[in-house]
Length: 74
Image 1 (cartoon, helix red, strand yellow):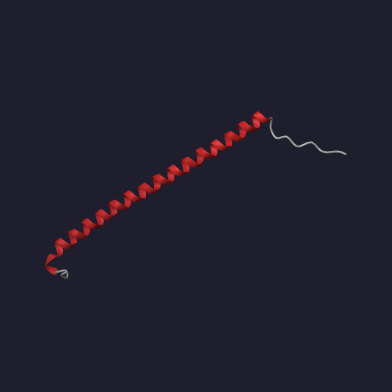
Image 2 (cartoon, one colour):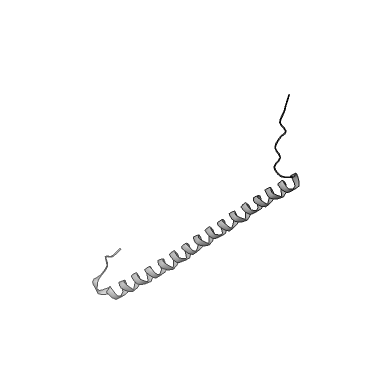
């Protein structure tokens, strides 16, 4: 591999700028994908939590609420 020559400053500067642009586009894409994934995980957790909450409410409504066991008096 040859060392960078001073005579090709314009080419090297252009390659550097293009490289930064490509890395920036990849970084923006990756950050967007991570944010979307976190959004879907949060929505999924809320849906599952809501389902568990509604299941408990329905089970309690069918069962007659919270009943305390009778006191054993001898």
